[in-house]
Image 1 (cartoon, rainbow, N blue to C red):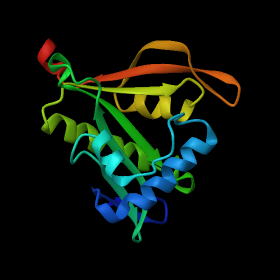
Image 2: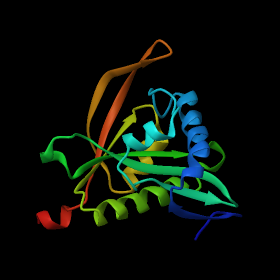
Image 3: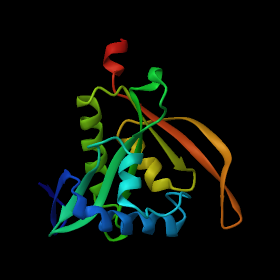
Amino acid sequence: MHQLQSISYQIRSFQEQDFLALQAIYQQGASEGLATIQPPLTSHKRWQKSIVSGSCIVAECSSNIIGWAAFRLMSSRPIYRGVVEVELYVDENYRRQGVGSALLAQLVTNAKSAGYWTLQSLIFASNEAALLLHHQAGFTAFGTRTSLGKMHNRWLDVVLMECQLHANELS
């Protein structure tokens, strides 16, 4: 159980009935133009196929989903089987209260347990909160892709960040 200023919440595995709440939180991020330029999550089955099975976790407060995170494979090529991309969204009413940090920390733990060796995140350069969140969780920026996507007639730069989960094995 995690405690915010005046509320408590838990991190748990995704359940199918959570999808509508995930969809709404995802749409908040898309509408703000800070999180994604991907199309809306329209189908539970299509979304489930896009993420690593069993990787989705949610933050729940008083029976409400207030954030979620999952990972997806970066490539279908066998050499990259240990590299996954982080997907993380927090309800706008619960941001900057530790929910994203708790979700990301749990996702890192889950990725280590599953045998993944690298987590990657692709974050809009304008999303300073997400960049800071990932940096504080041990991610490092390793590049910026300029003009990678276009939204509302403006080009978006994307910062590439990674977290090496096997760093202690390298020394």
